[in-house]
Image (cartoon, rainbow, N blue to C red; front, side):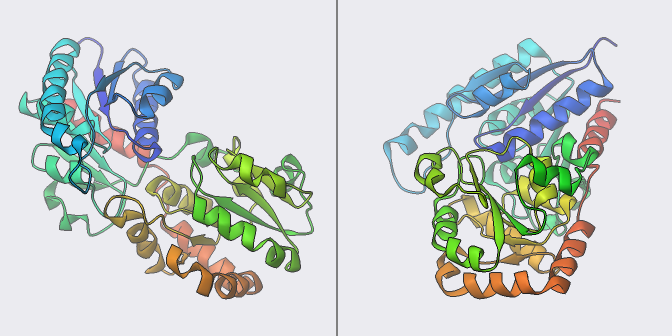
Length: 362
């Protein structure tokens, strides 16, 4: 048997790309001679992020269906046929031993073709509510790795393995000392610290909320590490002060998590999985602009376990001040949320997914 060859496919958002990279890294750690190829969507962020992580990528001409009738939707059948043909060529040339799909439209044609040729395929579904592409592929693949219970509502029960979502290795391996983390951000060790995470691009509604409540945070003597995103840094940089650190992107997430007493975050699957490992009290403000409103469903799954709080965007005006005040004042509640969210952590997810892939090849 020569070297193993793996194709990983997924993308469109960081939520599909980073898990694929984490899985590739773990496969490479175990099989340093293995060869890897990523397949993504031609004009999406994977075309930049995957090469940065040191892997080759091929792009397909594919995009999702828009909700309404548009010119793009009329192109969809052509894009799909073009992508299936290109995926066929890629698979024929690369001859993978296994194909791993992490969701997003590009993984559809790739896994469809691979499974049709008898190549073992594994899906990784990050959310508590399955994505369209993964639901379409459910009968074609050998195993489906999930992060939540009750996923047999979407997938055949006998294919499911609850592994959790891959998270960045540095988070699992080394938690930073809180005083070191506060020093890194030049913050005061006597004040309580709020960390605000709006995702890599930022979240307009969360940024507006924080700006509107700077007076409240000051009155409560809270300091902020505020990741506003690269789309918004020019607009919000003016709020920077000794107690308000405004960043477009957090390069040291380990320090950010260690410094935080309370966290306000979007509820993307990757963020949720990381926050479970971190084990701090979280207030989720899910993005309402994502497919099937899955961020709200992710947050609700944690609320059901008394492991986090959630406010929908359209209720922020009415609820934020009261909910935040209550959480800040109630140390017992903070501890309870932190303890409960940590119980849901699945820190060995990447290794468990790779075990499943390698079992199929063997």
